[in-house]
Length: 324
Image (cartoon, rainbow, N blue to C red; front, side):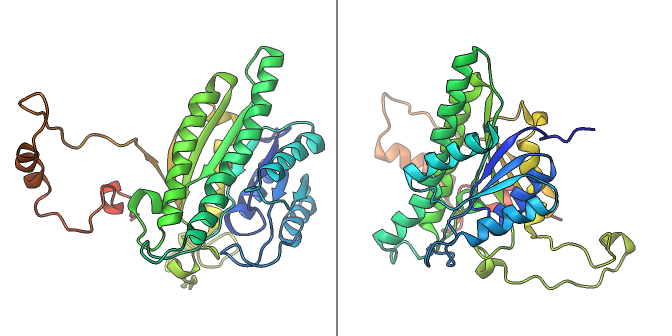
């Protein structure tokens, strides 16, 4: 029996640690040859010297398990290095079928304290990094489709965040970048559908070095029921373990997801939520050619009266993202 991704080649960015690592391992487990990309800086804020070690260690881990992998240590936020990443997959494996964009950094600060450099750095790695790799992969797939006169196989899985959905007061740069990634994803999905390529985005919730300040460390408890034990008899997997996210990435990369395109999915702890596009909650029409200030005051002020000042249009509770 063949594996779902057998014969396919994939790129995973930011794959030296955390989510990217388990995503790369999952794609390899499902049969894909994987280019493991990671710039390798030690700081989650993008500080420290670049290092080949994280990407090379994950590539070696894949090969040790019987898979096929090679490492790439370039910076995806650099346009030329992103080009080289895509070219490496095509040269090394003879093809590119799957692109998983995961690389990112954090430079948290309240909006009134954030520097221009802190804003630019996060937008550069997350949003520009997603664009760079997408640009070169999309050009490759479009060229192949035009050369053959038929659709090709292409899958893009981008990484957004619930910080975009529900807001994150101390992360205006990160939330903006993650919102931009959703816009990039839906635009890409529309542009590439006729070539056989899909583009989707996930909002993963996972305990990694990027989120250690938010979620802290996992403290496993003794299972109260046998069903709560893992196969090795230990207490159940951390509900926020990155391993909960990887299977969805594997599915979206597979032929089974051919009709999933332009979608946003929240995933964590054994839960996947399909997020709808924003819907109109209320509509008001002017009784004349255009609104006046007084008319808007009479319509909108009562509509919003009584709501908490800090309430956002997409609070997590409204979206039903709390599990159990």
